[in-house]
Amino acid sequence: MRVSQALVKFVRVLLWVLRGYWRVRTVFPQLSDEQQARAVEVWARGMLAIIGIEVRVKGHPAQGPVLMAANHISWLDILVMHAACHCRFVAKSEIRSWPLVGVLTTGGGSLYIERSSHRDAMRVVHHMADALTQGQVLAVFPEGGTGDGVTLLPFHANLLQAAISAQVPIQPVALQFIDAASGELSLAPCYHAHDTLVSSLWRTLCAPPLLAQVRYGTVQMAQGRNRRLWAQDLRQTIDDLRK
Image (cartoon, rainbow, N blue to C red; front, side, top):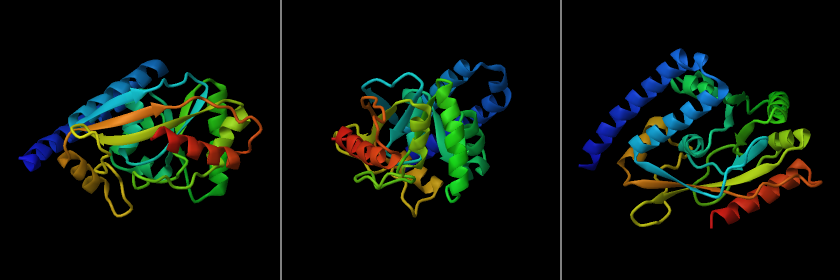
């Protein structure tokens, strides 16, 4: 029964992706930035509802200008954060070339970075600082990759320089996936190193109903910290938020 239900969800996911692709290609150019942001939120909530994930928000997302820093568990994290409050993500450059997904990610306002290039990281930091100066809400995953859903990876500090340069706050954000029935932590949505997008999606579709918890922490300024020290403090703050 669960497999047949997952198959139905899978078909609905594909149809929802195609609907989003069509809207980005045809409707988005006619919308204002605010209208695009609201459309992304609605699309993200719709996708999560199809998959069987309810978003539960604790705390309040800050208004721009602000840089959000969140732990990274799954490819679903971007959808979850968009559903809670639209923000522009800094994503790895490979996503831009993914079929369908690349168009949707670009439509969501993502900035792309070539992770292996220090020069490209500095380019992205400058773009981020400009966007923050204009009052935008940006989001990064300082771990640089997905963890196991239980422990946090070390935080990379490079992209946090944008908040220091623009003199804007960072808001720590803690993400968790929880089994809706038991209230226990769920690892089904985790995106492991050996996973493919399809295998991770299928495992999530076969899982029982889930809650995606988004816990917003208190915004904080650098207060004299360099980016490395700030990264360490943010990692501890986000770890505490998950408890």
